[in-house]
Image (cartoon, rainbow, N blue to C red; front, side, top):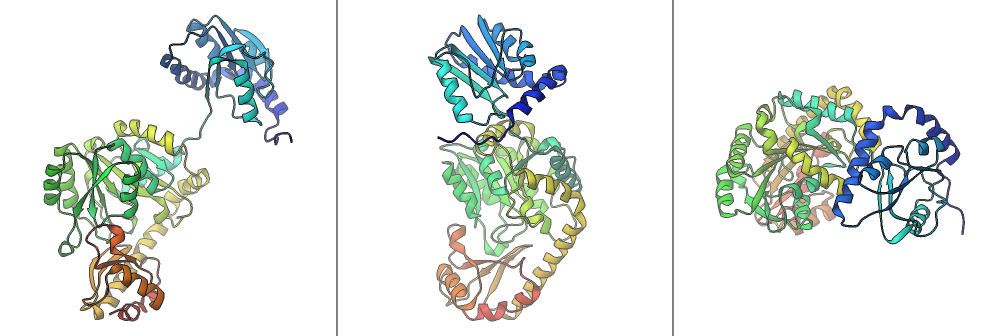
Length: 466
């Protein structure tokens, strides 16, 4: 069998640990907090421990084990200087080569010490061998959190956009906005409960709820209203569906492009507050809203943190969809529960993308404004080009990124129409049934990434169907 690949220079690592022994007090609070959190797990067991091995505890784990009444504690570290600081029986040794007989300990603790090991599976095998058959192994390894300067940059951008006091503490960075939704939903609802989704809905939202075992209650939106959801209809559905724990609004909408007016959002916020239901605002496309006015005034009221959660996507605003990065804006109570979901499903978003976007948020503000204006011109061009065929192809909703088209009378239903447009006329659309029930006569068309000269061909391609 070949030797494990040597990722880390263990000799250099030992020298660095020797050098760090003199300045350990500078990082002691972090080590102590990590040790306390790890050793809290001992309270979940009824076992009694008499012989413990502290691997790389740097003088903070061993005293805590002794304080719990464990009589014999051996402290082993790659650095002899650090092993001596533990105040227990010191052993200078390598975690990859444990010098202990089989079954020597009934407890092994490795607090923030195994992430420098080259052969982690081999080290775990040796730890298991050193443990008695009913022994316990507790370990923690560091995981990178999200960048503070990215949270600060986004908080400042949100505060400026909404004219509201928002801080970095309100922000959780995620690996994309789809994951943000998937992380947030289990905090609000569980098995036997439900989330209200306006229809047509974003299909990933519906699928995420299904995967999580959470029901979806449709809130039908009417073409006559431009597919803007109706708070009164939502109130009636909430009354009839007490299992609903959250209501999701996407503005500007995907798939319709519909923009929910600020006064309508305020009514939804009041409704959810009165019903004790979370209001989730997916504002993935908010940087493409026309004009410079605040999208709404909900964040100006400090009580938003008790009932509103915002989802945001960097991928759309900064044109980096391959670098999955999104955000959740929420109050402290929600974030405390969200941390469990994040720790289970995400750990940490892509680090390189965080560094790049932390720079981009302030540096590319003018570029984003130019991009907003570009999208606005494309929306205007789309509306202008559709006007001559509007008697056949009705634009039921139009926003900063998408348009929702009503199929002409006599045209096939959406699934067949979308296939025909793609295969015969070179026009890619998504059929309405992808977005929920009752959408058989609609297509979603994404015009935002098409230059105006490409949009000019749109009427001819659509007219090929009807």
